[in-house]
Amino acid sequence: MIMGAFLLLTIMTAFRILSRNRLRAGLTMLGIIIGVGAVIAMVSIGEGAKAAVRAQVASMGTNVIIVLPGATTVGGVRGAQGSAVTLTMADALDFKKKIPLLSETAWSKRDVMQVVAGNKNWNVPVNGISPGYLTIRDWSYSSGGPITQVDMDAGARVALIGQTVVENLFELGEEPVGSAIRIKNVPFKVVGVLAPKGQSAQGSDQDDIVFIPFTTAERKVLGTQFLGSVGALFASTDHPEDLPAAVEAIRDVLRARHRLQPDQPDDFTIRTQVDIGKVQEGTSHTLTLMMFAVASISLLVGGIGIMNILLVSVTERTREIGVRMAVGAKRRHILAQFLIEAMTLSLVGGIVGILFGVVGARATTMLAGWPTIISAESILIAFLFSLAVGLFFGLYPANKASRLNPIEALRYE
Image 1: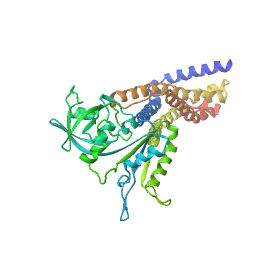
Image 2: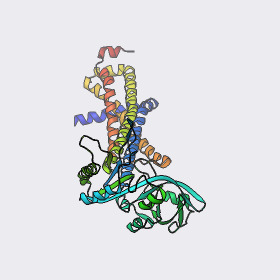
Image 3: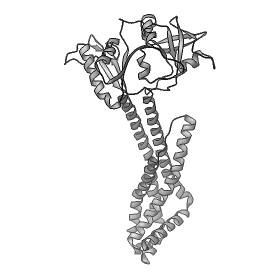
């Protein structure tokens, strides 16, 4: 009871002392306000970025496995990944036969080409695909329908187009389905418009796309070094926990098909949706930590400001401290008084900083369009960090005040 009354009285005294010079107290708290606000805003931007990455990875499809051609080595010079033609549609068909874990397999080949509709044209990635590709990528349609196996078998001149292509080749309100477009002077009928997916995890526009049957692309549009060669293979599993086993099975099948010896490296690269997500989230997490560290510097600067102002206050109130000691105040009372003043500064600064941080995060979303997620955890961490800064940097001035000699303090002018 006595301790509670003493604590309350000490806090009231701290507020009264700080209110004597509001401008000085406000400037002292400024570093804490900026630091807490910056921590909350930066962490919110980082969390928003991670959520956006998760959404982008999810837009790739469900439990996706991607197999890319390996690198080439010519004359001792190693080319980039994908520079070799090492994958074929027969590889994907063999997957389906030999790997029960796979729910679907597909293949594709792509190139950037000019697509013409009426008097408009647009350079866009044109992808020759097998029908299973759309299932693996979990692509839906805003109008029309998919490319079918019948289209594949017939080498039909049909196309699916993304929303970005629609916006650049057709007038507002015009129905693209049933319209004619030309790719490399080959006429195609638009049979479907793909539902929007937004940006990919790599930052490319997934809606800036044209899909045509793989057989049509191979024979009439994109060409090929030899029939059946592909740019990438795709597969999916029913359950995410099956991905590691499926990847190993695919590796075993491909090494056997490509007649690779045990000491030879893979001539292909396998990536899963989980791998891509981990890399992207890892990057976002690193950036979030970096931004948090930079913002925390402001808190440390604010703490130095608190220590500086309390040292000045100790000097100004030396005689007052001597009087308090003379009438019975003990060292712990003086120590508590200055520590509470330091923590009061950081407490008030932290509360104001939280408001600034929340407003800053909201303003970032509204003005820049960046996604932000304000979590209670980030607010609590920033608030507790500000209190810790006040306690740490207030300890030295409080200790100095409590160690003053009462007689010398009373004589101080």
